[in-house]
Amino acid sequence: PSRRGAQVKRTLLLTVLLILGVVGGCAPRYTEQGLASWYGPGFAGKRTASGERFVPCKRTAAHLTLPFGTRLKVTNLDNGRIVRVRVNDRGPYVDGRIIDLSRGAARVLGMIRTGVVEVQIEVVQYPPGESP
Image (cartoon, rainbow, N blue to C red; front, side):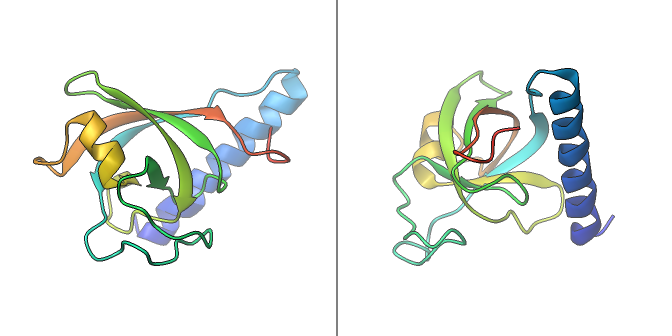
């Protein structure tokens, strides 16, 4: 499917999960599994989609649909390493990838050399006003 089609499907799925959680009386546990990459060279100091300046050594991430400020637990499924990040940008814009990580987050996960790894992401906390 196209990048836009995948984004629409992901947004629809998240919306359904949020509705089910509210109707069912408990917050849904949002998880996603797929490929993660990291970015940073050439973006240092530039504005992210959230408006803040990108700092490659911080533990931040780009996700296509999750609200800015969402805190995630990202697990490298190849080596079991875990990092917590905050969504502050949009992306990734490469088909088949579910998240782009800052260099700081990628370093913790041990993926600097490989560049792309299989991960699981889990929402730890939604930003105020965005809780399901």
